[in-house]
Image (cartoon, rainbow, N blue to C red; front, side, top):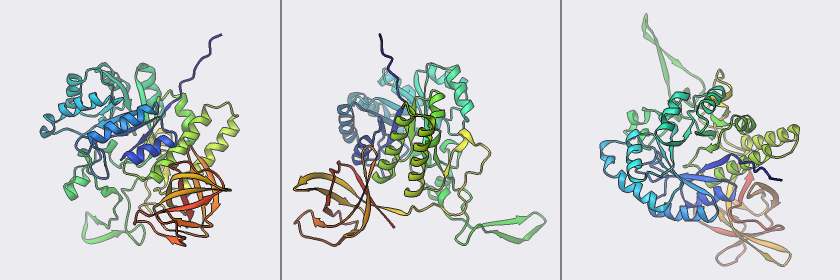
Length: 420
């Protein structure tokens, strides 16, 4: 009797550096996407070079994971001569795919690496099945769905172009412009969002004034709250409670946004979505699945920095998705550090922590262990990792390392947080 293997949807995570990539894999990502500043849409807060991408690819493939590279800028003439060398290097590194939005980049990839798996970036704004078929006919194996689509639109694309893989954003920041085509950053600061250098003017505070046509001398100020107006500030996407519906729509990859985000963001979000995906593929009852997904949503909502959560256009096209009250919602938990190692000593484990924010003896903390196991404990004792001297309190910013005692083994990459 043959056993049918069910292919799970791919969980795709962002990685702005090697540390973030390793954290994403530890918490259950199947693949990561990276890019070098010159050709991806992340110029700032991006630590990758071609040498580091080579190291990242080797690490990924040792784990049986995948690594994709973003080459999704809208290329200018000055980029054209540089791109062939870049593509040839990616071919030599053996990355698993390339994200593209510009037809010129597509032509360069086809010429210099015909066998490459090319993936259409969401920046290309593919919003209908005929456009999807066109890109598939050009050799694209996957498209990243435009965020403006409804679930019905997605199903139509899958039905009309069944051989095309579909990738869908499920979590992270949303651009207020049409799939990222924003010119505010360029206008205000000369930093081009479409070349990866957005300063996010949509998150700024604004003072907005109105002038009625027949009363031009009477200027009225539009006030939303005492600190300014946030009319451009989109809420963040969170579809963790909707993954089963996306699975039924035959989406091939769930994508998390956030190459510029912290390891704390990555570990928590990737870990939560890993557990959510495993849950929807399990044999648990629908009631049990819903309970787990609701719990994971609450963990993200209460313990992570975000701007409020929305389901975007996929399920709720008519609902207002701007956070007009403020630019963000602060969690009631603070990231304190990340575990580097853990070793048994007598009755306890000694766990070395890289300190990110203040931590002191007596703090009640949660330790989020890969893939997503939360341990609650109290800091009873701390030692300086350099000289083993007892310390009462440490602070972030000085690259300090401390050793704490735990009753359980704490895996590398685990995350520490305390309630504020």
